[in-house]
Image 1 (cartoon, rainbow, N blue to C red):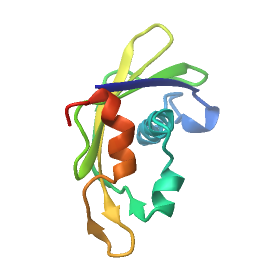
Image 2: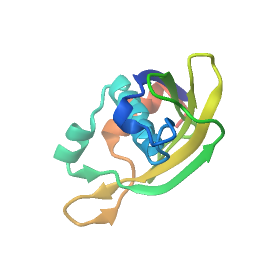
Image 3: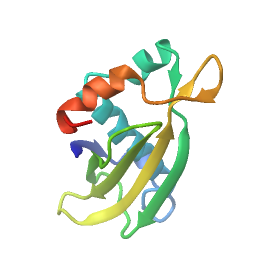
Length: 137
């Protein structure tokens, strides 16, 4: 399994009238975690797109437990529990500074050929990047 952690500080503009992080912002935090995980593998969305591969979201699941608040430092723990094939599954846990789990969820991305707008298998660059985590694949 691949695991990566990154942190973000909650900005004032990300909160609602109650002082809590607006619920839609958690999907953006997931994206921050995913982007940094992909970068830690030596890949970037930009390079994948330049190679003709798009990665649209096919499924998003979020479980809200407790609210984050303005100025909290959040740890976004992103993991890839299975070897990518025609999709890329990422799971998330967002915790506050006290270690309290606030939100969990998952995002499934599809690999799509940009020119044909058709699903494809994971590109070789992705398979090479994850090989250390699944050497038998």
